[in-house]
Length: 393
Image: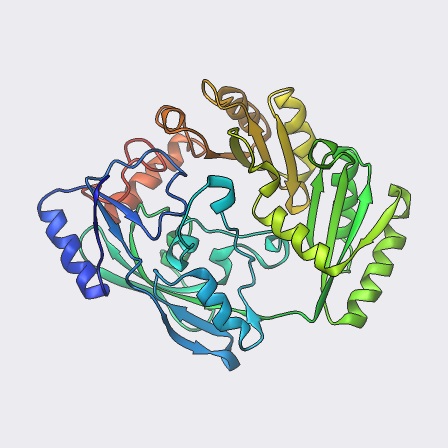
C-alpha cells in the first residue's frame, strides 16, 4: 500500500505536485479507487487522491449547466440535478459490480475514464457534455480550459483531451457539464430469438429511423436462455407511445416483439449499462468498440474464445468475457481488432495479466509519437500514472 496524499483544494494540490516534482516522486492518481483495477498496475510511490475536494461549486438549472469538484460522488451530483428535474445526458456506467470495488464513483474518475452508458448512441460520451476543466499538470501548474457554454475553438482542446486520459496528464480539480431535463417516461421493445447478424440489422433499422431510439442492445441466449434484442425510447408519453407503435411496424419482419414494463425496463438498462451480465465469476472482461456492422464478424474471428458476451450501442460496443488464464486471449483479440479496425480494452483481469499485456489498444507508431508529445507537454517527468495506459508513458 502506498501512502495517500489528500489535497483540500487546487492550491494545495499545486503545492503538493511541485514538491513531488522536485523530488522526482512518481504518483498514482485516484478518487475513491472504484476503477483502480483498470489499466496496467500502478507504479507510483505515493497516491494523490482528490476525494477531499468535493462538492458542487455552481449550478444554474435555467442554463442547464453544473460545476463540481473532482472528489464529488457521482450520486451526489445526480441527486442535485434530479432535484431540479435534470440529469447527466450520458448515463455514466458504474464499474463497481464488474470490478468488485468499494467506495463511491467520483466526478473526476468519471471524466478521467470518459465514462458513458447506453444513451451514448444518441447524446455522446462524457466528453461531449463536458464543457470546462481545471487541471494541475505534472509541471505543478494549474490551467483551465472551457467555461459555461459550448463553443468551437482553435488549438488544443484540453476539455476533450482530459476526458479519457486516465489521470496520465494531471489532477483534475474542477469540471463543468451541460445537462439535460429528465424525460417524462421511457419504454423498451424486446425482440426474441435473433442471431447476432439479425440483431445488428434490427438495431440499425431502428437507429436509422426517425423514432429517436436511445438504447439498442442485444443479449445472446448464453446470457438469458433466449436471445433478446432491446430498443429503448424516451420522452413525453404520447410521443413514446407513437414511436413504440411505429417501431413495431418497422420491425415486423424480425419476429416476436414484446413491450417491457417500465420498472423492469429500468432495471434491464441498468444491467446493460454496468455490464452486470458478465460480473459473476473470475473471467477476464474485454470492452471492444467496433463498427456495428462488423460486430458479428468480430465474434466469428474470436471463435470459441468468448465465454459470455453481449452488445450495446447498436452493436458498436461488445462486452466479452474470456478465461482468466495466460494472456486472457489478448493475442486473438488484438488480431481481430487489427483486422476489423476495432479498439479493445481489457477492463478486468488479474494484476499478473495486466502487467504484461497491452491493456489499452496499442497505438499506431504515429499516434504514439503524438501521445508522447502531449505527455511531455503536460507531465515531462512522468509523475502521473506512468505506464497505466501505455508502457513507458
